[in-house]
Length: 209
Image (cartoon, rainbow, N blue to C red):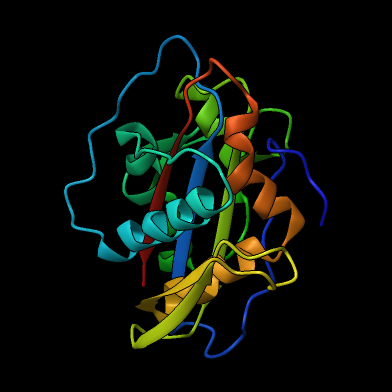
């Protein structure tokens, strides 16, 4: 799936038990607006999300890109930021990863949440409301791999060759990041931030079961 950094894309998923899944959400903003209202920061530890960011920066560093930093606003959006559906005031969504896991769906759109024109609210719409109105993107992955240790090869070409090294990582995170880096659209979201000089770049992973 070819995409520019503002396009919503997702990798193939390994399908297993439909309800017993591990959902990971990575939200990467490549350029931010001049102001960003900050929702309450996520208070729950997210070691898998932190690991996803570690692998992201290993890939970026090996491929000559600067490291990304976690933006608290995006971290909260990915994990536990509560927002109300614009046409359904009784519908409150709490975090992209948590909402997909709780309600059993997998989409860049917010299931059941519509705009006034009848179209579905997307992650990009919510990010725009948070002040991120220039280039922005969301990578999401789900799989049924557990937290057992796997080996992740980083800094690879898109076909998986020419890797810079390996590192141990929980399988569920390694599989998600491998899928991102093997997909042209996801890879562009992860590696494309440094192509926009003088604009701050940031990323925020979120993960839940």
